[in-house]
Image 1 (cartoon, rainbow, N blue to C red):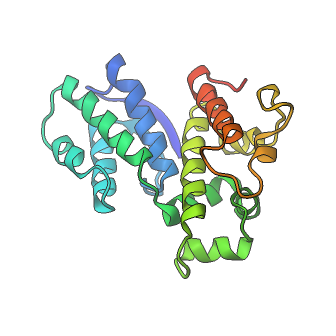
Image 2: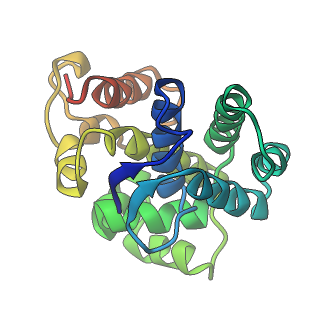
Amino acid sequence: MIRIDTVAAPLNRPSLLGPAIGLVRRALALGLLGDEPVERLDLELVRGIAREASSVGIGRDAAVELLGRPTPARLGRLIGRLDEAMADSPLPERELAALAETLGIDPLAELLGISAVSLRRYIAGSRGVPDAVALRAHWLALVSADLAGAYNEIGIRRWFERPRSALGGRSPRDVLTGDWQPDDEPVVRVGQLAAAAAGAGGAT
């Protein structure tokens, strides 16, 4: 989905480029992008993300300002505010659909600790998503957004399967079993590994 080959001003400034790319990755993971591949990073793309986020109640104040004519310095702060709002706002049905596209129904259901049948019903909207499942899905969406900075979809799927010394020789999938919570210490370490992969361009 994200195959950027053109970056337009003012987002080509070093202070804006990284945050803007991070915002696009986050929007993809939360199901806030359309179906068309993203090849051009420009202000209109950022505004489109802001409009879509605002339509579901996320970052409305930042969206209003982004639709105006903010200075480059102000633009960076607004992108940061919108990104932070998205990180704090689960969108379970959208996130589950996006995650299923990346990870597959059965592997995702296993990570969430639910059946594939229930997962399909949540995605279809025929059953409400329990809070515990929504929190896990949001955490997985944020991790997926980080990993998208270093890997394609196949690489993301394989990342969950590889044993890690930082996890005591276990794989992320081994950690994400049972009634896990995003603030469990081993789960936090998995999230840190994903963030490191995004920052360094590869996993540790």
